[in-house]
Length: 203
Image 1 (tube, one colour):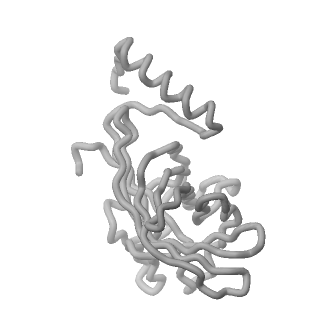
Image 2: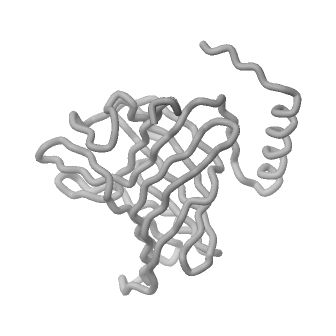
C-alpha cells in the first residue's frame, strides 16, 4: 500500500471542506490522490456482449413526472476532485408529454464510493474491462436553463450487494426525481451505468 503523508495545511483544508458540505447535509468522502474515475450512462449490445458510451437513463418524481439523461464524464478522487463531462436532459409531465430539454454540465463531485463486483459483459468499448467498478457517485450539475441539481449514478455489477441499484436519480431545482427506472430485461437497453477506475497516469 502506498505510504500517504498529508501536510497540516492539507488536513485543515480537507476538514474545512467536509465541514461546509456536512452543514449543507451533503454526503462527503475523502480519498487519496492518484485515481481518476470515468462514469457513463451506457449503451449495451446484448447480441455481442458489448458496453459502449451513449445510453439513456430515467428517473421519476413524486407525481410520476420524469427526467431522462444521457451523459459521461470523469472525476478525480484526490484532493483536487476535478470534474469533466455532462450530457443531455429531457423532462416529461406525468402523462408523458415532453416539457423541456437541453444540456447539463458537471460542476463538482460530492461523493464517490466504489463497491465490489465483477463485469457481466465480455466486451468493453469504453475502457479496460478490468478497470470497471461498481459504486455510487453523487455529482453537482448545472442545467442549460440555469437551474442547478444533482446527479446520482449507481452501478451494480455481478456480485454487488442487492442493496445497490443500477441506474440514476437526479434533482433539478426543487424537484427530486428520486425513483429510478430499473433496467429492462435484455434486449431492452436503458437505465444502465458503468464506472472505470484508473490511476491518473494512465489517462
